[in-house]
Length: 193
Image (cartoon, rainbow, N blue to C red; front, side, top):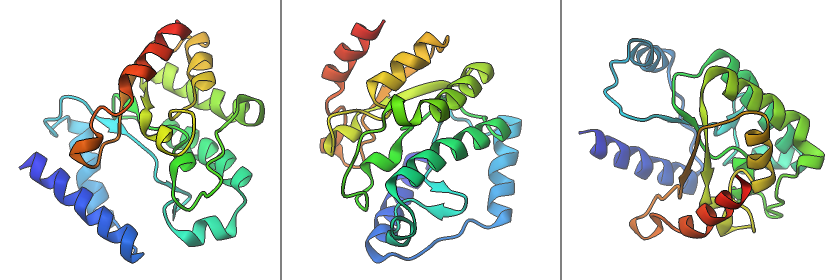
């Protein structure tokens, strides 16, 4: 049932993105999820937490990108992620930090840089490290740019600050994408340590 539910949610999300319909999660649904997280009754072996919206606005909708500059989105995404992590954190690893890089509406696909966004990123890293939450290096960013999510300079800084938990994933929503570019990314990560 869990795999079927996951596939249903992925399918539903694909429909939502294609039709631009908005879906709201009710407070009752959130309460149920939070109860399951708090009591450990989910039965999951490993949970990846990820951020797909900023202050109630979904990063996958055109309207979001029309209202803000790329610089505003990138900075606010990291700031909002740090805020969320301070309140939540009942998961093992933060998934695809710097996700806005790969969003279709982001036509530039500019890679996050430590020079521009390092202060925001370091706040995220501090919270992750303090809470013992790891960070995923996600190869899906390589579909649109020359960097995974987050880019390797971010990963290097996370490790320099004392981060110890890294995972690698391909964010595959289709069977043919499973494991895509993991071998080369793993080799690059080994060079950082």
